[in-house]
Length: 112
Image (cartoon, rainbow, N blue to C red; front, side, top):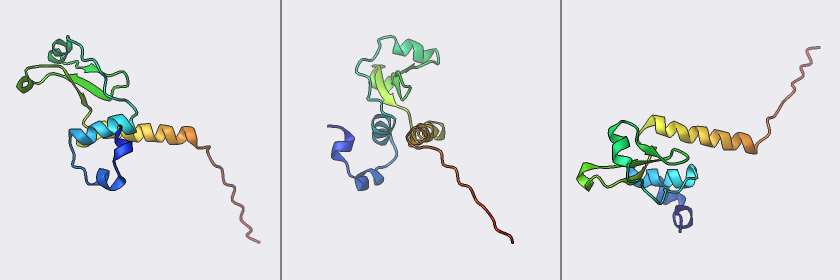
């Protein structure tokens, strides 16, 4: 069951910033579910400064010391990082543009 099946608008609006909200955005807004398999080489790439990204780039495979460096998929921090949040704007703008035709309005003035 996805978030959209079980959550109301009110429940989403009262969510606090953090990973749960970020997961919701990555899955429901950005349209990319969390990848199922975490690559074993994720720690090496993270230490080199290039963490593994999901195919659409909405998830990072990160290793945390306090979690025994086990590779775990984490959503981009949409709710706390403006550069990640801007990706949402781009996605929604692209979808709106694709679904709507440009409009043209002709205005005539009669000054006589």
